[in-house]
Length: 183
Image (tube, rainbow, N blue to C red; front, side, top):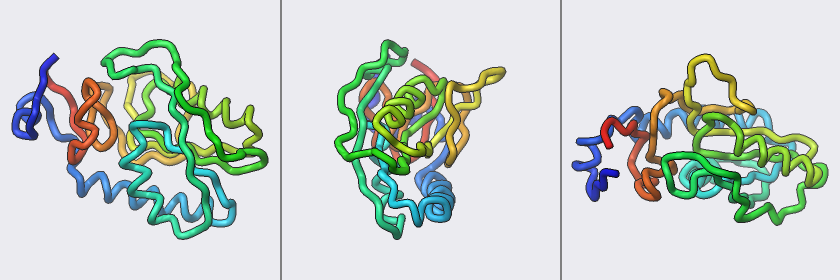
């Protein structure tokens, strides 16, 4: 593992795929789509923690209609580069019975975690579950376990971090989306 404690050091080991302005421009498109689709549904917006925090912070104030906000925390990464078993840390506390639910997450790669969360929402009575992701990995010859209804950006099948996605537990605050090029 390489530890970088500055953006200058990070840029030596990572390539910026999308800068902050490009990320926010892509999120504006998602906000427009969400507004069209959810304006009359009074949805529950569930952020998938911790990666969804920046995206939630950007989109929630821009959705000009009634909604409720909660979060779920289910992870397979536990601050590692590889995946593990699904671990539930927090289930939604808002009643989902007969509600439209919008799951917001940082990245869709294999879709296993998001599918488990969507299934949980349905088991709690949600009438529909929509998924919005900041990024979707482009994995050759592979279809994820679930698809996103709203995707801001496409990223390569590589280790990416920034704007909510972590590198070894940190750099969720990186001002854009980066691809790790050396470890």
